[in-house]
Length: 104
Image (tube, rainbow, N blue to C red; front, top):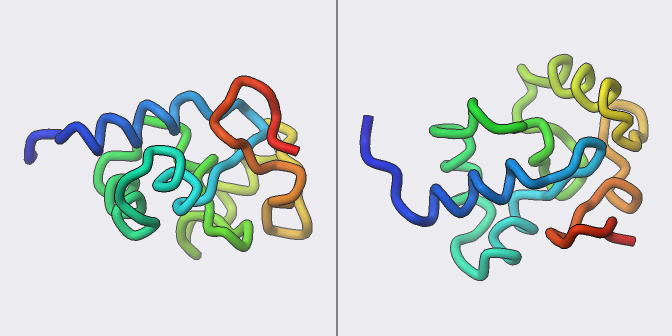
């Protein structure tokens, strides 16, 4: 396995801090960190994200990580009380801005 670089560590640290019932989009994470972009965050998550609450990182339209993970995402979201609209996260209500309070 290749060594984890500082960007990877920052992404995974932030994902671990997303509260249950909240989410951040890939682009939100890049913007919060002030580096990379949605694709770079996606690469980090697909390579190293298995040990963090990966279901709390979604596409900007509220869909989960990958089509083959929809049922696993839904189970986690329902368990955590994440606001949903059908099989997507309700981004207006569930998006977290990286601060301790909720993003409204």
